[in-house]
Amino acid sequence: MAGQSDPHLSIFSPSEVEFVAEDEIVEIVPNIRMEALNMICGDFGPFFPQIASKVPLWLAVALKKRGKCTIRTPDWMTVDRLTQVLDAERESPKEFQPLPFHYIEISKLLFDHARDDISDAYLVRSLIEDIRDVRFHKVETGLETISGRTHAVKLKNLSAMEVNIIRPFMVRTLQAFYKHDSPQMIQQAYNIGSRPTPVTDRGPRRDLRRR
Image 1 (cartoon, one colour):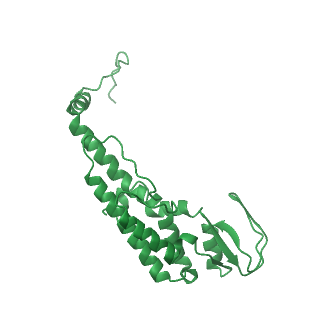
Image 2 (cartoon, rainbow, N blue to C red):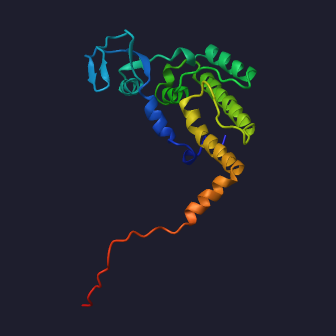
Image 3 (cartoon, one colour):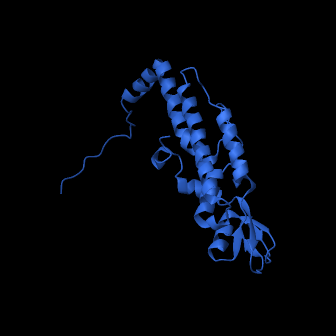
C-alpha cells in the first residue's frame, strides 16, 4: 500500500510510532542480580538471575544490549498463533483479527535487538509480514467502496501503524467526496477567499519627514 514506505503521507513518522510502542510491557529473564530501578514512569525490579520480571520494552532492549537479560517472546509471536491469525485474516475479508495495538513496532524492535531470543525467527517474521500484507489489502479494498454518501468509516482491531498510515487517506477521500457533493460549500469558500481584507481605521496618518 502506498504510504507504507512514505512517511510524508502519515501523521507520525514510523520512528515516532515506534517510540510510543517502547512503553509496552514485556517479560525478561535477567542473568544478573540488580537492585530496583527507580524511573519517572515507575519502579522496576529488583532483578534476580533466572527469575522473570516485567519491564517496558525500552528497558528490556537496553538491558539486552548490555547482555544482562534475555527477552521472552510474547505469546502472540509464536508460529502457531500467527498461523491462526493469518488463516483467519484470509477467511474474513471484511474483519481484522485482534492483535496487540503495537504488534508491528514490537516485532520490529525484537527482531532488531533480540532476534536470538525468538524461536523460528525467520518463519515468525515471514508470518507477520504476510499478516500485514493481507490486512493492508483489506484496507485498500475497503477504500474502493467509499462513496459520496459515506460520512464515517469504522475499522475495528487496526494497529497503531496501520491507523497512522490509513488515516490521511481516509480523511482526504472523505473531504474530496464532501466537496464534490457540496458545490455550494466550494462557492462559499471562494467568496470568502475573494473578499478584500478590511482595513482597520487607525486614525489620521502622520507624514514622515525627509532626512
